[in-house]
Image 1 (cartoon, each protein chain N blue to C red):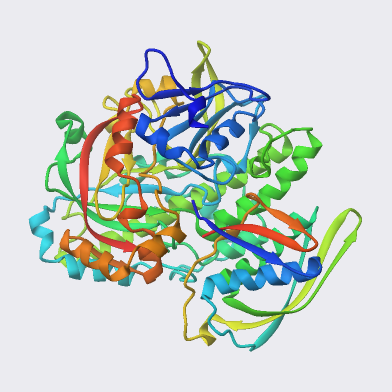
Image 2: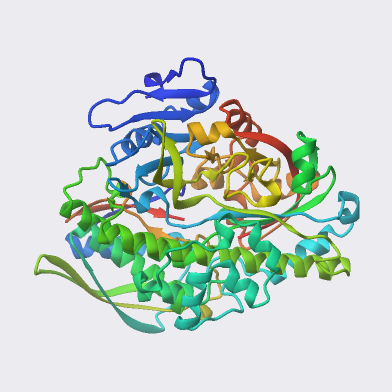
Length: 481
Length: 129
């Protein structure tokens, strides 16, 4: 299928999949030739094509350079639909609604932290519940959980988890408008009642890294980054709560597809008109799950600050552990974009894609507005991660979106077959990375070899104009779910 | 992407559902022995057998997350169609996570509709792990 792709004239790293059959728009894949070649034999490009069938889709079905096979949508997929005439699809947002990343800076340097790494990792592992079935210390009644669903990270800050200034540096200030707990099932409430303040399993992690290289001094200064600085990552989402919301509404959407006479090539793309009752109800439940995830990352960031304070004998304030940014990469957002020369409101589905708004956008925090939004790209636990900045071109080409990570190269099953846990631990320790994991299997599934090289993905993202490099960081210690 | 696919064969739809459930729990605990300490009932609906199976499996995942209940055996399962909806009633036995000296090896987060196939003698489910 990759043979169907042609380079867009005048653009590097923009590949077009021309509209044909019942496709409503073209597909566009942002990638290098090497990445495109690697997609051959997977269903990822077929999924880009399927997404192009969604009613009301605008411009193109888009795929970021970390594209790989997902459910319905490819991971790394972006689709904007007309708010009035288009659809909303839970499959375009994912099961883990508002899975996302936050990054905290510090005034610690690598040499300050090196000799304390074992202790820091152990303290993080002790403080942060991770893995299947682990519940946190926070147990909420239905009425209190309803407050989380409407207030998001603000609820957590008001309860003492973090600082007021954190909210300013979250996408949506950590609270998405339009959330409605009444459109959330009792099952979702049950699954969400004890999940806050937990990391979960799979690819979720807490990571301690240091800034290895700064590419853009001006942006790094504004973001508060400098070489050898230690930074802290939190990657998690809405846990079982978000999964239940997605599961519940996939059923609603199945019925809506029949009711509204929508024809789709894949059941996992089921959808409803965004302005229908079903569409509005899903949006409000999805926003509630997004707020749950922002509250969760806020609480985990608080635990990370506590762990650092305990390890270094100084308060988190003294350690300068400010929030650089928190960004979602599985979400549906109502945004204003230029379409065919006119500004219009659209529903942007980002499924494994990061918002990457360029300079002077009003939704970028004031502190970063002249530079552009920080775009956080975690790589893998052995090599590197990146801090990028959003661009004007991203606004033109990708509805202000960029990649969200390295993207898997091996399936979880393949990783378990091919990678030895003892060798992995030894390799990581030799490269200076200390790892704690809830399960041995979980660790192997997330081995560096299981992921594409994030350097390649980031180069392609920058080549396509979707973001620009600010800094590259290297892992020092990782807690895996 | 999570990539665990389970295929189940059976003599009838009920048997296929029971086999698929067994496969899911085998995946989570890698075949560790789960004792029969308690019993509980599961009741789900679906507009077609596909949705019914996904709901049946997700209901069990929900019980695990919320109540800590681990299924050892499908004791009884009945599927009926009424008023255009499929209904499933099942009695299952198993234990609480705290009764086990092993932990789940794989966290199955959801049964999905991705490339889902269900017929009276066969089913194929992709699990999000």
